[in-house]
Length: 166
Image (tube, rainbow, N blue to C red):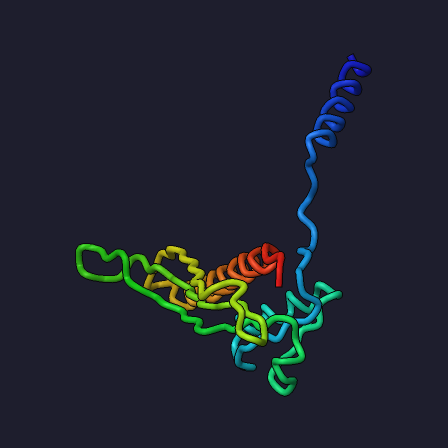
């Protein structure tokens, strides 16, 4: 019975290797230097710069450096956090909120050629609300915003990796 299981496990490993399965690695970008045009106080912008800087082979540039020194320019046009009521109980008390994070960006060359036209990314999550646990719900809301922000940065990284020609 044991040799049969061993053969099945080896067959499964070989079939995964033969099908081209590979874990997603660090993205390969078509440019060696990127100017990130975002405010210093932006939490989303700081996470974008941190993720780009972790690639190692990409030179990330910001405000004091001229944009013309970079091969590409990432403009963060806007970022917005929204919180709307989506559910109330019979007495009109809030029971559920919807949290949204929106970001508009574009990628261009310093000369103005658009590599990625103006694009909006949107993340949204629903969160229940309970008046007796306000502090806990505030902490949960903060965690959800951070999670949405991280998801959005990963989407942006995949879009930047999809750019092939400057």
